[in-house]
Length: 256
View 1 (cartoon, helix red, strand yellow):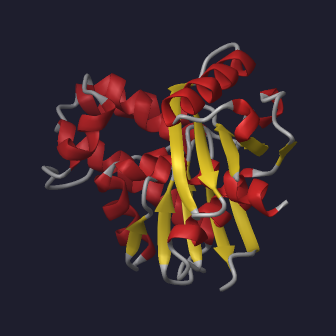
View 2 (cartoon, one colour; view 1 turned 180 degrees about the vertical axis):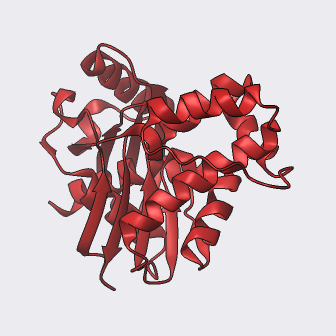
């Protein structure tokens, strides 16, 4: 029996098809978010089904999560991304006790029990300065592709200090650093360090290892390194981090 999970995030929409009998992901798709979220989610769902060789009548239940979950009108139910990320990470990494998720417009620290249940969480959704949107802005200002930002940061000898906690003021600070001749790798590394510091403050250093990193930002190795330094513990990136929320939603659908 096939179940579907849809993560309608602020920057992209992800779909995962989960086979409850084999306990395997049998299809997945991703698309950039846009103005008509409902239409985009519907189109991606249909496309994922077609590519994976399934018909809509083969999907027993669909659960939506994420920033725009309310716009996924064909979903049978909606669940918070806290629950879905915890469930998705625990499925692939059952030893996880602390989860760090950095999305397009918010960041979260989630503590889970050995059985995968959420014990507690902390969330920053009031400012983009600790999110993927901040990294996108920085990449634009530095004139590089977002995927290059992490590679560039490895060349940093002395990360720049980014002290502003607001993305608008941080952008002004970065412009000033560029004007003063600061090296691009140092600015890139400084931004990663600033985001990691905000996550560490949000967690109040109460991280319980093993710690796993998920969300689209986890695809940048430089961010993982920055988090390890800020939290003073090993941080592991989960398998296919951008699909964790959708996987969790699919698993919740299978359990309902």
